[in-house]
Image (cartoon, rainbow, N blue to C red; front, side, top):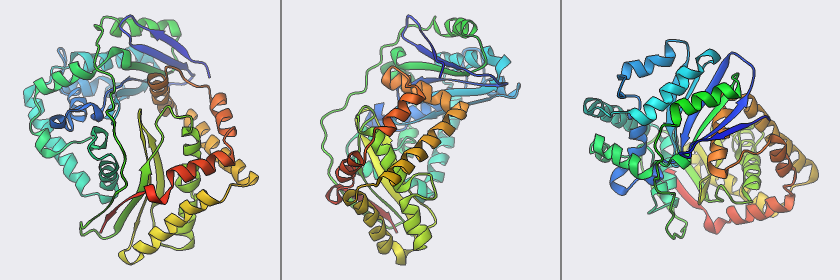
Length: 406
């Protein structure tokens, strides 16, 4: 994969992958998310991202929204626990238009008080709609359970009470305290010459003063397994079983991804889907997930089922965990598992928007972007012994937490 890089004096980095085609993608990834909030700022990273669309020194909200949509493009943003991302998809001839609007939004927003008050109602409505969806809400509640007392356990949206307190001053203070230009990456995938792209990159980002926000800091903490049942009067019972897991830099992370895919990844042939859905008809939706963060990670199994099938479903899920802890994968099974995840990765590389964001995240976290061939080699080096060790570490029944909605 051809990758081109450039770094500005203020620390903002560029990574670009040239491809042919009419559509291009670019974005700015900032290494600040909801875990950087103080207790009274719960939801402020996400709120600040929303306010980037509400006006700059030279544009009103409507003009921001129209800037790319008027030429058939799309402008969007999202907040995670560790990043804020503004990104765009557009026709390749509109590269400058896309780069300029992203720079203007991130560095010239004015946070009008009138817009702040309107957006509070919008986000509180978003929070309430989320509360009406137990299949999504349970994931946030589970991370609050396993990361009890840590900001990374907080939901990204915040709470109605904290959102109501936000002001333009709150946003400016959060940004000045946390945004760091050395933790910003501009990523691009499209048909544009390197000379043209770096010229535009310098034009719209080089004048930005160096910002030295604080780095991610994790105080000492010890995980304690917990079990909790909430009575929410839902039509289905919803259940999550899981554990803390490996961080982004842990050498065991690739094996954990492979193991998670075997257990309950996106394939219909995952062990959980075959056991709970295909064989026993206990659940329509069953999955597992592994989310690595900079200093920790979260593994979870989720399923929704009828109340009378809850205990049976839990037993079936735990039985699949026990099989991976006690039975080594054979050569054929391991080969299929490796090929499956390599196929998923290859398909992801063909999705240029997803690839653009992946390149930026990799450079932000690891200061490099691995070639697909190197990633495949790491997958091929995962042995059945590695998977057995990982399964016994993460799937240890004494270390699993459980959250149930009934």
